[in-house]
Length: 102
Image (cartoon, rainbow, N blue to C red; front, side, top):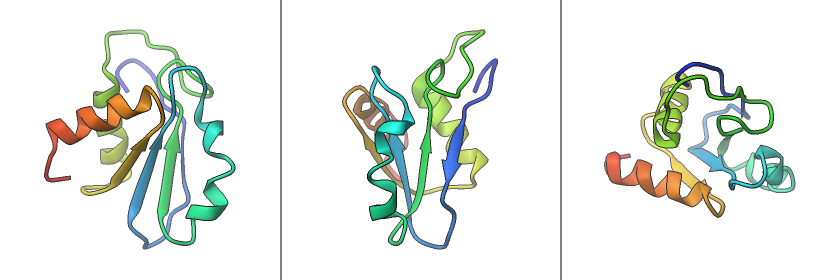
């Protein structure tokens, strides 16, 4: 993330990656009930958006899609299923438009 650090959690494993993007009014804790249901079938990655939860507040201009791209690069992910809740859906759509091959 430009100018700060994003908090993220990765369940690891060899399963297909599934990235969860929370809404604008919450943090990654919204996914707590789903992690146990998903982690046996997917490598689940969730993170707190810039300025939410355990992620740093922005100190310079940024985009949420740029942050998501940086997160995927950090974890070495070239292809993933991305699920966005509410406003997080816009981030997922933005990634799909910039990287349709993903």
